[in-house]
Image 1 (cartoon, rainbow, N blue to C red):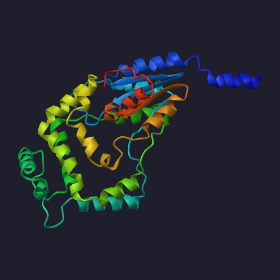
Image 2 (cartoon, rainbow, N blue to C red):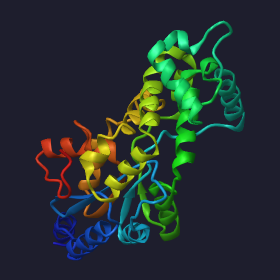
Image 3 (cartoon, helix red, strand yellow):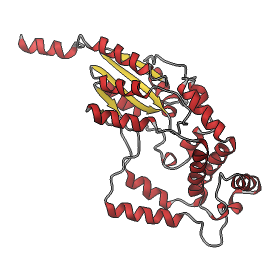
Length: 302
């Protein structure tokens, strides 16, 4: 009889689960940023879509995000390439990265990209949004440098990921690991690539830079106003799909759906902090959840 009662208890949602889950959902939506709720049996998954490059003039409720994490039982975070390396590995990678910055002797970027993009880079350099020696730079290094210059011109705020990390540590909330790639093979693959393989990244970065700080502000404002489609379709988003390490396959984790399914198998409420593009892009997590017969409740993403 005791064993039967224990088995039934294990299969029955805890009475406090629903009220707690509703409280977490309400608190999450007070952040002002895109939030979806997915329910299955006694489980609730709260998906919070974040972006990189939040501009300083973007208004959203950071304290509500921390309160959401404090109330949750589990947090899926972070969604990054796992960096586990010895100090000697890090020193070696940094040295290779610095050597990679310039093209091999006798090669120029303008010969690789053609007249139109060369003219674009010359204009950006004249505006202070690209280095003056761009013609000798490796495309990936140049793309990163242009992004940095545009960000400095725009004025950026701390990322949502930084606030999440602080809140998890402060409130000692359990983390649900999102399957991540190890750093070593990703870095090894980077140094095995040739400059031409990074031209799509440079093209996307040039497009973003030509759109200028105004586009970064529009995208950031769209995110904070839950206009998901406008945020995801911004020219800025192409960088995250075409630039390393996304280029190495880590831009959208194919195991994200599996991790989400495991979270929905547990009673209670799980908060998942996931890149908005991974959630709302075509074929992303929201589309996959819908295809699996679940109903993400929140802002339109199509």
